[in-house]
Amino acid sequence: MSYTDKIKEVIDGSDVAIFMKGTPAFVMCGNSDRALQALRRAGAPVTAVDILPDPGIRQELTAVSGWPTIPQVFVKGELVGGADIVEELESSGALEQTLREKLGDDYAASRNETTVSLA
Amino acid sequence: MSTEPLRQLLEEAFPDATELDVIDRTGGGDHFQVIVTAGSLAGLSLVEQHRRVYEALSEPLADGTIHELRIKTKGAA
Image 1 (tube, rainbow over the protein chains, first blue to last red):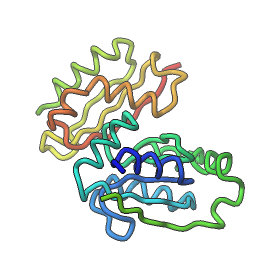
Image 2 (cartoon, helix red, strand yellow; image 1 turned 30 degrees about the vertical axis):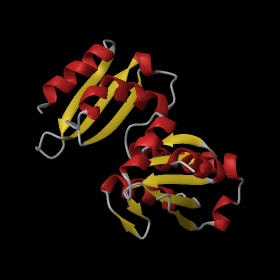
Image 3 (cartoon, chains in turn green, blue; image 1 turned 120 degrees about the vertical axis):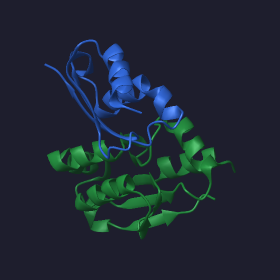
Image 4 (cartoon, each protein chain N blue to C red; image 1 turned 60 degrees about the horizontal axis):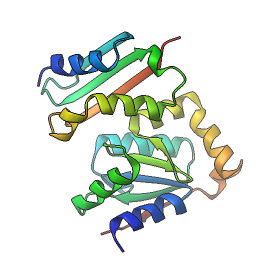
């Protein structure tokens, strides 16, 4: 399976997916950390993908999403944005609202963080 | 790179901007904060607003001139 297929599988199959530099346990970039912290504050369940193991992951991710920078956050298959947008939506309360609409009112009850390795 | 070429690219892409600023966040010429408020951004989602900024700066993003970009956009009323 190519990265593209695996990437699409994670995007479409996860409630909330974040493509980041590093993992939630060991974040390798300030912006990935900003987005992850905002998701945690909102109580979002998170499926994380580290894009660093192979430059091909990032290349194919950007081809899929049309978004040039990392991190990239998706909710139910839809691009929400990068660190700036996720932070902005979290502080205005719009992120929680989106999560409630797309995942249901009790989305935070099943909160967990999983890491998926593509390489 | 200085902020001037970036500002020029944004001015071309957003001739209607009521607020437009480029800040070199670290002084190193590769970490930038961009602020754009424009009528042409009104009614667009934040994702679409940021896409417009990325399109305007696609060259310096692609060639690595911009290492990190923070974006703050607003649709002007």
